[in-house]
Length: 178
Ligand code: AR6
Image: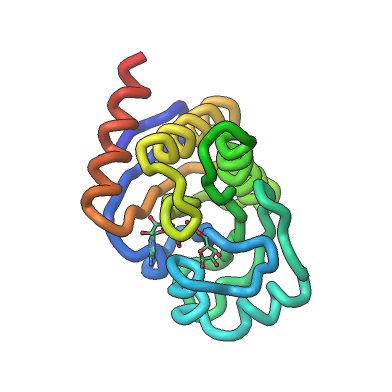
């Protein structure tokens, strides 16, 4: 699914984010930046050791913030590592922290003058965030950002499976209907 938002294009697609050739791809990392499973493991495996070397130098990233490294052997130029919240019961700061993870990643892309960025569905794997709610927060935050900033031309959400893709598509349709 593709949608123009102000001066930018928002695309939902299904696949493996490590294959993306956007200026940056976003990693769903942990606060130690020590690597792990899921999309984090896939990015480090495909990108090679240079990414981890830079992560070690940076030393960590608080939940809701973002840092940037090279993309090593990947097609993308940079990896933006952000840390989404672990989901407990939704009564804490989960929503605010997930929103912040997307917002800080977009801000970092703007600071680095990047024109395109690809996101996975942050926090919806090992961190257990319910996917409908996570999709709404991801899309709402991105749409708000693109309405306020014209510098990023393309934002892609790369969903790993068809169920996630369908949920993101439905949530985007709902948000656009308002
Ligand atoms: N491309 C796109 N999406 C992917 C890929 C891929 N190659 N692989 C998995 N996903 P997760 P989190 C999807 O667990 O929940 C790690 O161990 C996956 O289906 O990667 O934020 C870190 O080190 C899911 O929808 O990230 C942290 O410790 C989404 O990516 C912790 O997991 C996010 O799942 C972070 O947990």
